[in-house]
Amino acid sequence: MVNPVTASEQRRSAASGRQRGDLSPFRAPAAVPPDGAPAPAPPPSGSSNVDMQPDATLQIAFNIAREAQRKAYQRRQQRLRRRQRQAALGSQTAAQDTSQDIQAPRSRSASRRHGDRYEDQALALLTKAGLVPLARNLRCPTGEIDLVMREGDTLVLVEVRVRSHLNYGGAAASVDWAKRNRLRRAAAHLLPGLARQHWDGALPPVRFDVVAYGPTGTSWLRGAFAEE
Image 1 (cartoon, rainbow, N blue to C red):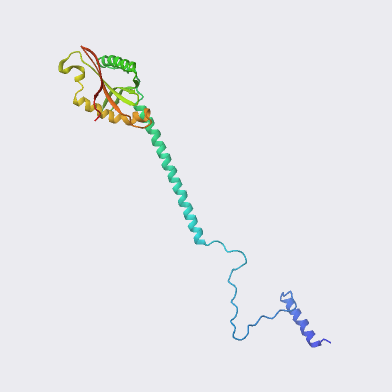
Image 2 (cartoon, rainbow, N blue to C red):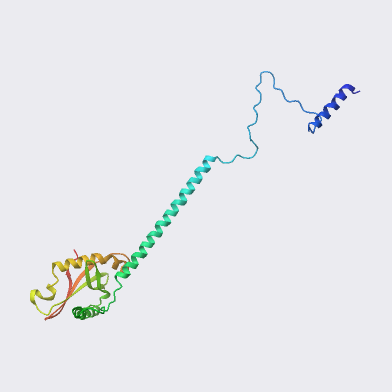
C-alpha cells in the first residue's frame, strides 16, 4: 500500500517540474564525487563533436604565399611582353635602316648623279659575280656605305671611287686612312640592324671591298682593308 503522504509529495513535485518546463516528472540527482576526489572539469567553451577549423596562422601564411606567387607570375609576364616589344621595335628599326631602294635615289645633284652611274656599273659587276644586293647609299650619323652586298655568309660593304686622273695614286688610293676609319665607324653603327634583318641577329663576318674607276679601267679590290 502506497504511503499517502509520499504520493501527495510526488504529485506536487511533478506539477512543480512541469511549471518550470521540465519534461520529466522526476530529476536525476547530480552525481556527487566521493570524499577527497577532484571535481570533474567543465567542458571547454564552444566545444563540439565537429572537427576543428585549420589554424588561422597557417591560413594567413598560405594566402601570403599564394599572393606572392601571383605577383611573381605577373612580373615574369610583364618582362616577357617588354622583351617582345623591344624585339619588334628593333626589327622595325632595322627595316627602316636597310629599306633603301637598290636603285639610285632621285633628285640628286649633277655630281651625285655622275657618281650614281658608276655605282650602277659597280652594282651590275658585283651582281654578275654572284653577290646579292641588300641596300644602297646606306647612311648613318658616322658615314655612308655606297653598296651593301652579301656573298654567302659574308657581309660585303663596298666603296665606289671614281678618278679621271692618276694623280696621288688614282681612285683606289683615294680610300685613305681617314676614309677607311669613317667606313669602319659606319659599319659598326649599321651592323646590328643588318644582322637582325638578314642574319637572324647573328653578327656575320664583314669584308670591305673597293670598286675603283679610272683612266686605266675598272678595279675590284676584294678585302681592300681590314675591319680592325
